[in-house]
Image 1 (cartoon, one colour):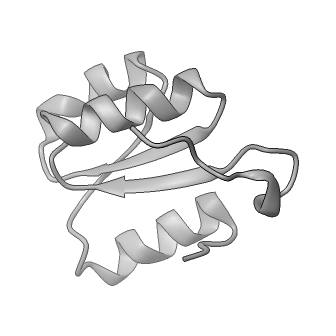
Image 2 (cartoon, helix red, strand yellow; image 1 turned 90 degrees about the horizontal axis):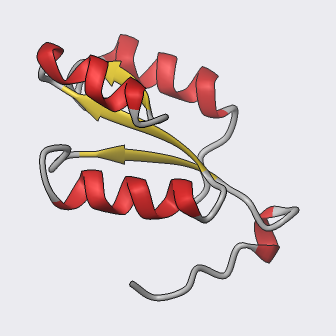
Length: 83
């Protein structure tokens, strides 16, 4: 994985929102980001994955990307989403 240029986001750490592939590549990317000191919020549509994601220090959010309430919850948690 390429090294992230986080300095422009302040203090070298980011709040990251991940959605999709939480059973494979998304989970691995989330673990890598956590290991680098970032905070990770992971969207999942699988309720049974919530305990495992939480246990692995990812902030799990249950829902779908097109869900307005989920978008609002993630936005409130992250305070700001930057491209």
